Length: 406
Length: 141
Image (cartoon, rainbow over the protein chains, first blue to last red):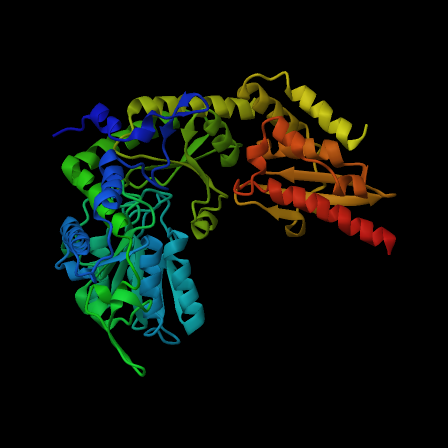
């Protein structure tokens, strides 16, 4: 099956909006993707016909709501091929998923212990570990990057010691687009008895995610970067790990029994889901992932690879352009700098031409320091983007550069 | 010219542009023409941290008026700074403290001054006025 782009574009109402009287070109998908009608309608339908609190009512609506909520969990477990629905914890998003693990790990990380990360992490997979290490007297080590924006696995291996308690790494870099060899990293870590957390925020909509294949211990992702709603995400955790960790927040569904002196906690996955969940968000996330499944992640990947290759070739024709992140194994993200031009100026002018891209440090300041740049211009693609849009973007970029330089 | 008259003359100048390109080209031109700040003032102390472009601002008291010099690494930001400097530099403390910045709105640059716009201009306006208050207090002491 190939991608029917005009059909796909008609599924996303926002794509026919005009910005300053110009057709929107939306290349900020790394920040959030747009939502198809199936997602918008699913959320709307829930509030129109199903709304009720889950897991507690004896009445009809509560039962329906609970069924749909738990069916969505099972569907998502299948989508990422986890061994059990108990391993799928609903959170507010990737950031909360990582904070949940960091919070629970703070009880088991001691002074002198070590955590290993990389120089390419988003702040969300860096600051929770940095703060945990500061609070517990532990050390956060990071793997520096190669010139093309990849990780040399031998350098990662060198950092491992008998004090290493966790390796935490992005599946795909939000700045460089590098797809990290997560399966190999997990193999190396497990050979030393070290668990691995993977930040999958940039991966979920772009590559096949298979928990049993990757064999990682934790995997975090957000719904809103995969055509679903904002404020919803998942922490996948291996059952044995989730059983070992203490709860993150207390109250609501995560409780089994409470007396005046003690509380016992619910079983997985509920142990980590305090308070009333965002049911519509879960159903919207399911609808977004179903949208991906219907098109086929392999088809999406092939199409987005084509877009990335085309865009990379075209921008390189502009004098002074340097692409940041040149891994042979990358996807959907094109970061660049142009000699003598501040990314912020480019972003301002592109905005005037109806083009949504992101400029700045992309919440990855350590990476910017490592690369010794203040920021980049990032175009990030999704399955509804086209080569025609890339042509518009490249033309606009040329115009912006000539306005600034001349 | 008073602060108000200078602001009005800027609004007049911009009224001839009917498309965004001319307006931004002009801002870029102004940015490039902004007199360079003394390198010794481009330090952390004078840095106003916006999220994306960096802005340096220096203020000097000259017999009851304030001379501002500034710089930024982004040229559009510099263009907007040059408008602010043109209106406020060389003015008395109170005229700066009570200045009306709505001319930026009238020339269609309001979005650049929204607090969510990460370009440091909001902090810059605050800093300009903070300098005026501080130097006024110092002159009275």
